[in-house]
Image 1: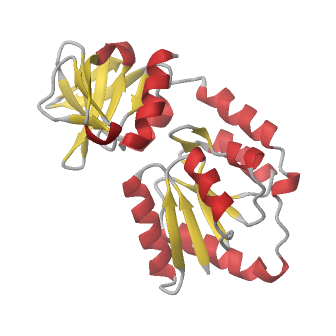
Image 2: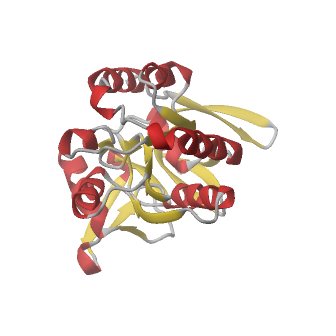
Image 3: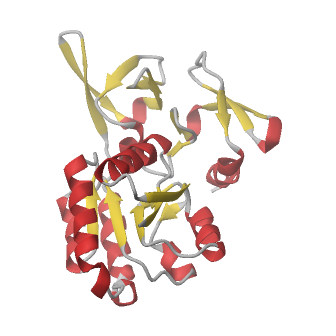
Amino acid sequence: MKVLIIEDEAIAAEKLAHLIKKHDPDIEILDFIDSIKNAIKWLSGNPQPDLIFLDIYLSDGLSFEIFTQIPVHVPIVFTTAYNEFAIKAFELNSIAYLLKPIKSEDVSRSLEKFKAIRKTYISPLNSVDFESLIERVTQKKKNYKERFLVKVGQKIHSIPVDDIAYFYTESKVVFLVTHDNRKMPVDYYLDNLAELLDPKEFMKINRQFIVRHGAIGSMYPFSNSRIKITLQPPTKKDIIISTEKSSDFKHWLDS
């Protein structure tokens, strides 16, 4: 079996691949794709896989857009951090899904289900009401998180999102940093946070940082068409935006 993973968070993609190979070492992972643009390019230039694991919300938008740009006739297992309300949309359209954080048993169940129906599988993609799915997902996502509860010592603080300049991860712990330079741990993964924050205000610029529009200080051209930025409040870390994300970053700043 040949599997394609479309997921914009490298750590999540590697974990998913590990769980797939753990279930069946003979499964071949063809590639890791991190955006709608790259997915369309890959699917246009390669034979289609047997199965695709697809994150719903990629760095450049909702992954449903892939199916409006190129014919896809293979089964899809969607991965999502959405709650039960949004998931109902996928159930109604008979699409398999894995709820993040993804568990080993969930991957195994999806793969066994695929193997069971493989010989008689008829792609449901042509009959899926993607407009309905997009409407449900985007409608839910309009209710962005407004504050975070964080524990510091023996105290619990409620931090309004408006007070947050950026989030970053260090030693597998995610921190928020406020405009007045308070640093506090939050009990979220960085990719989950990207789903909860207003994309007009925040962007996940690399594997370590989600930044607010107004927290960006200076920007400098860097090697290989990358961009180096500074933040306010400042951080000791070098913040580099990859070549692949530079275009999206500039578009976000200009929107």
